[in-house]
Image (cartoon, rainbow, N blue to C red):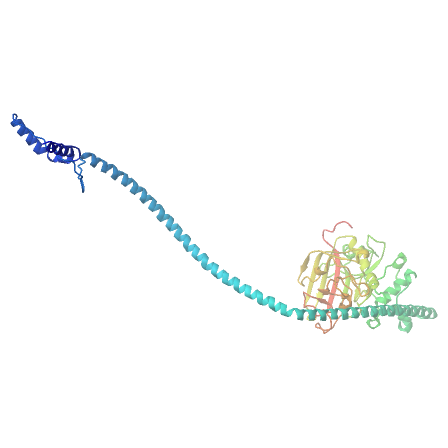
Length: 495
């Protein structure tokens, strides 16, 4: 009996504690039982207690409305999480697109890098080939250097020989000068013995050779003026390599202005002069071209020069003229300094006279040229002057204008060079190769004091003709050249 009670108690506890669903499920029977119990109020009731058992399998729990509310909150949370995940996915998608473009660029860079690597490899191979080639050519270069050294040695030997020849030439020149002085003395003696002979007859006799020889600067000024004019009228065949100065002399005595017997027809002037330059001659009313007596305001010296009054508005002092090859321009420094030639033909006024003329005002230079086809051109420079002899009569030029081309600006700021005084920038003597005196550089773009060749184009070992490089080139010798100067329109006061 006790066992049965114990078992019934255990079963009731299990049913009450572990299986609440059972009580919920059996709610209707219990109500019916309660109603029946109410109906049978006077009957007895029994409670059975079953023993405790272990439950196996799934248990069904009825959560009711509370469980439903919990699921809605979870859904809301899940939706929020889902939206966040979607935003992150969108961000990742955009980032993936950017990275995709970067990947394409990286691929392109890799491709370009591959091409550059191939190019570098090719250049490296070429460099190696060049290095090997140069290494192979080292012996050839050494051989060429040895040949160059040998050639240099030979050139030095030739230069030494040339210097010896120059010394011999100077000796011959001095000997010729001595002979010229002797001839001059003989001519004077001949003139003394023929004082009663008319002048026209004297000039036809051999004694008149003194007119082509140098005169002593200490002689009387009147006699020197006569010799100047006779010198200018000397025939071209009497011109020699070492002949003395002709055409232009410095008259140190005012008595030299006295009338002299002259083969020239000097212009009949209103005033005897002297003038400052040919521009002053023109301003004074003298419009005839010819030989005039000039005296620069900066020096106490008299100069005879040809004034060109018909070309380019006139007033030009001619400082150089070439027209027929009658005068040899391959002269020494002293001759180029004092001047030489025939005033009514080919002549050079003289560097010292040019220095004093251009020192008194602001002068411009005009170079008039004519070729063998009759074409006339000119080159004009708005400034022209010379430095003193201490600076080797260095040339100072201004701006160019004209239609002949600029072939003289290259010689600007260069010293004057002759055969006996080499002041050019060339390793040799440009005057030797160009056969004249000029403001040589290395060597010349113009050579207006060179050899006068007939016909234009000439054949020579060197370019030594009378040329203007911008007009027919250096292998064409011009027919006529005239260099002349005059003050600028706005000429300042003397320097």
